[in-house]
Length: 212
Image (cartoon, rainbow, N blue to C red; front, side):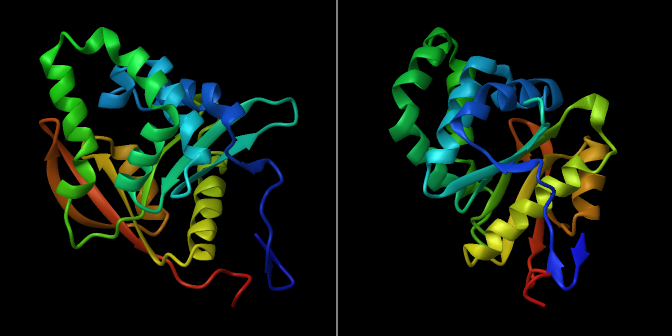
């Protein structure tokens, strides 16, 4: 909300840190259960979210209650490809240990390679900056948590000099599609990813409320 021309962020919205990795992984697994990354399990997701805060091209926010509960998170990238590469440098050994059990399953290896190549395949004309994932605890949805953390992420993109961001979401996830539309994203294309239709939205970021 705004007061006196300045934008105020709820004090429960905090930058994502390594200590939030387990909670973010649990929220992802429960709230984005149909995605390929979720199929790799919470141990792998935990490595991803432990790495992102330390990646120069990555960042995120969480909604943290005074008692320490994490009720929502958002993970972001200046460039998805760069974040994946930086995450592999920082947590690649631990990711490999978690993924070792999947090596004998060619379908999983193929989908993993497709995921790593996604940023190059999704479209050269789209902005490289991307909202990688966002999830809110089911029992607290509709209370403004998602709105607050995506607003914080957009402000962080502006500070980094980024004015266009994209997000990809399953075409059949009606609630998520509506959320991004309400947040200012515009449907740009629909493509196949892991054999399923995926909508790609783009948001153009103007000046922040504080700047105007």
